[in-house]
Image (cartoon, rainbow, N blue to C red; front, side, top):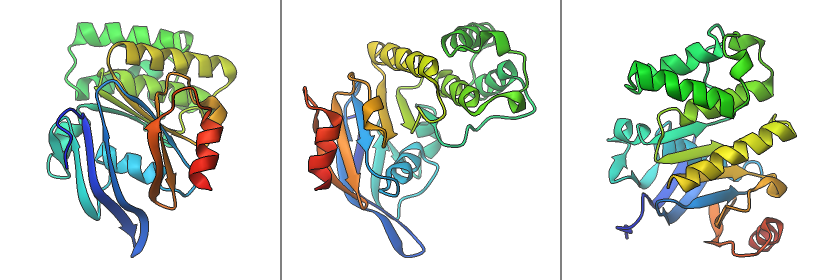
Length: 236
């Protein structure tokens, strides 16, 4: 049953590729302002779930609602509420960092003056201000990841979906990402972040959802519990 207080509703969600099930009958709700750590081994279905939540893939069965909009029929409305960071940077290699953000800002209908202000602010926050006018194809993996985070945050979405966001980042960039996440939480943003690197889950993640072989094996507040402890007990 749908939770009227939830920003995200997932009911009886399943996904199969070529007849092979990847996700099996998932049910969960996420309320506004929650930070959910999506945990699981590689191949557990984390990336598939985030693709479904973002509208990039269609479920085999079940329902997804984000902000009252239902997918896949209302996927365009859902995408306007979501910022997505995936393994692929979703950037144009022959544009500069600033040009990339300007392009995506126009797609989201952000006015020029406000767009310029947000781009300058985000490039500073992700540590790319001095490389703003460099072509993205000259960037390292970590730099592209940081720019992807800026891209996903540009339209100030209600929901941030982050798929292994710490991949390729050095310690300084990890700290910058954490600052962005903390600022998003302070602004009331909802965050779902997948990772198998348990030691990198920020302490501000108040809830853990563990996937194993396409099923939810744990879904609860973390409290003072260590993520490694939660993961071991859920995977046993």
